[in-house]
Amino acid sequence: MLKINIISEIDIPDPVLEHIESTLSEIAPTEVNVLEDIDLSDVVRSFRDVTRGQINAEKLLNALREVLNPGEFNDKIVVVVDDDGYVPGLNFVFGIAELCGNIAIVFTERLKATYISGTEDIAALFYERLTKEILHELGHTLCLEHCPNKKCVMSFSNSIFDVDYKDARYCKTCIEKARSAISWRKF
Ligand SMILES: [Zn+2]
Ligand SMILES: [Zn+2]
Image 1: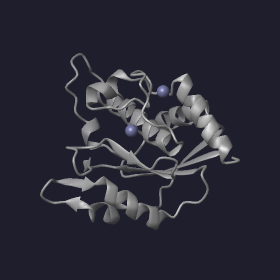
Image 2: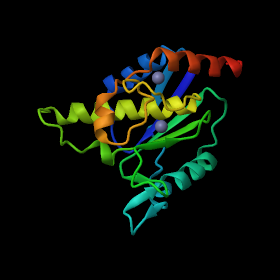
Image 3: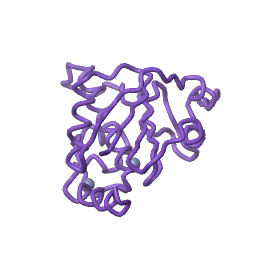
Image 4: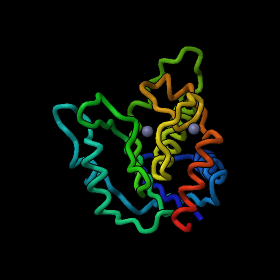
């Protein structure tokens, strides 16, 4: 069983959690839970670069590894940060995760941009983007690298347009790769 624990600074609607669970279930049986009692805001904000007004994603990831101390390969933790993140050398990142690791971080700020003409349901668009980025970063923790299939949720997104273009699911190739990554680890 893949155990996905989400620690979020924003409320995530049940349909989003259900979509994440059912999409990951194509790879392996999955259970998604929200950990309501954990507040990481102080840790998160301690990595805020005041000049840039952004959070250093790499440093935060390293710190969370110590704070959260996750266990087995199949225990994944997603931290949703209601802020903007960066890594040195990039203007911003939608998220960050360690390949074959346990912890994924998703930043919400860049998912809020709504300059897509014809979009009326801004909240629905935001949650769709959030779903994709959570699935993308979790894919990295399942040993998936970036996928050349632009429709696959594991394709690399340079911009919010790339995020909107891809589907909120893994392509067949990525599903197979993740399955074998799991089986190597006697999951
Ligand atoms: Zn990526
Ligand atoms: Zn793919």
